Length: 360
Image (cartoon, rainbow, N blue to C red; front, side, top):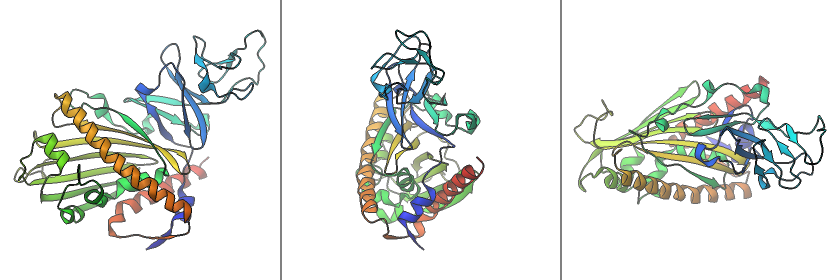
């Protein structure tokens, strides 16, 4: 199968009628936080009651970016002339002027805070739907059993390329040899894989049985250098831009295929939130959750560092890939058998965007 990158990206792109991750909850404070989502400049902040809000990053008076202002008891104050807006974008104060024009205000965006994530709705506010449509990741609230740290990278590639990278893991033994890849490349490339479409995207699981554990697993779980394990990689893509992961390994002979919920071994959950910034850039929110030594803070930090190093290796390839695609948008791309989950994810995203466009 051959497809043209430019045509494929043009067909999918994105929809504003969806919830996207705007930030980790701890990132949004009283000070304005400026970000660009889907080519729109937005400023995030918490009001005097600690409630998160998102406004257009442009004052209605002289178009000054509101990120240059400050939060007061009344709302977000423009740093230029002190014009102040509440969380709904309504102008509530013009210094030195009692009457406030009815048209004075800025666009606000619905936000929901759930499970340590701030979600934003970039479409029409009256189309925003409830939190039941948000991705559920309860492990973020369970620090006792799944301790974790958060991070975010700004990546110079389209959000679709980053999701594609998570849908085809056969790159791991080649790019990530020092961490989650290690040796035995064919043992990982030839993993037994099951791909299943879902109502909200696609799910897949890969099994690598009787294989040597990679360096990250050895460091984390303390596998013996000559140990052999049964290793799994379970991923679910949820439209439009979230990937949920559970990966791990148990020593051969412990029946991992029949029961992964066993003490010991290595077990990692990962939340991947990918939000479009522009056509060729995105925010990559990620958090690795330590399920193998939850009482060990050093293990949680070591895991975070290992995964961060791994993802930086991905970023280097993805940004180079985007550069080539931007320079040669008509270059053909050939799909291979390992693209099965990726192609189904693209199909689910395209269908989601088409349905959202047609229903509004």
